[in-house]
Length: 426
Image (tube, rainbow, N blue to C red; front, side, top):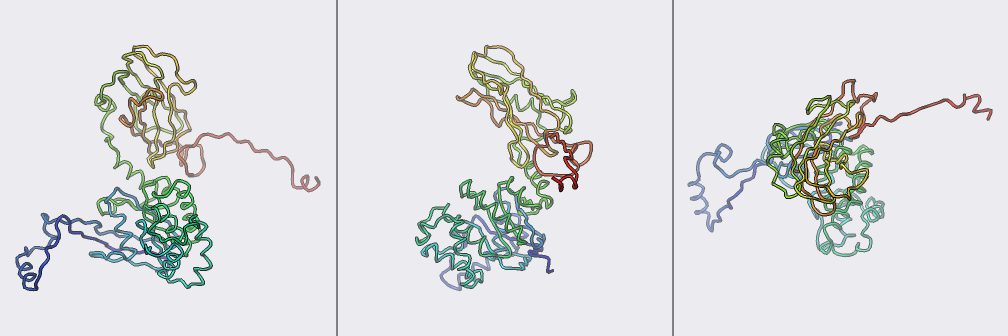
């Protein structure tokens, strides 16, 4: 038990939706209304207006572990953190928290709007059970990290949402909670502050404290969390290595099914007056495939019909990793931007993705065709999902597993310049 920071057992949360409760002026009316209600409980009645935000959720988080929580909007992520933060009570099940908890949930949660930023720092510290001397010791670090020193003595009701988040995260991260619960509030901050926050969470994890991190920023989540929980409709759909959970989540979120052929997608494209895509081929070893090996090149061929003369036509595609990272974008005129006129006719553009470039994982090719600096003809409308694997072990030419969406073959050479004795004499 001493190694467990969070234990959740069969946790469920039920909400009644769509109908407000009727108000009664007298006890007699309330009793009469209760007698008229159906005897069957709402849990057993499939017609009642109920929503299971969470259903029989069970998991454990070890001390010092950083765990991500992912899922679509409405999957139950925020409800889970609110229960763990004791903001709301579960319908059934239990959650055990072993340690002092710091929460960063919705913007402004835990702040008193009439108090200044300075006063709210001390208020939050007191709520966490810290002594004034402890807060004094951390005060300058909090203010420096938040970057709102100029507005420290201003009531927080006048703060923007970004300023709220800056101060809230600085307080939650620096007042040394043993367990930090972070919801998707970092999306409010600017890019530089998000990077700063992610770095701080990495430091917190390195100090042996526990973090439960809810985010739609899958790249940050994959880098920060070794393990993740994927929630779907209030139920744990997958709990595993973060990359595995992300792959499952992205696969479920794709707008096109893997069974929909490229021809079907191309046939459904709206007509365009300039360019018409006729086919897209994804070939390895002279065969179309969704399962490619990392140490063999991939040939992508785009065939199209130009209906009228055009300047600046660009034909290409994006390769996107399943964590949402765009690995690269390429066009047929990458080496020399097209400035000449493209005359009407049938064309074929072929690109070769070199071997030993993409690391094992799941990817999407997304067709990108447009007229330079004018408009897109096709963007995010034709996709092709494929998996990269290897045939020699963990990472093909690598001896061990390592992060990254690319794994180019980098040639190294190491030579011994001097012996120990020669080095000492020199």
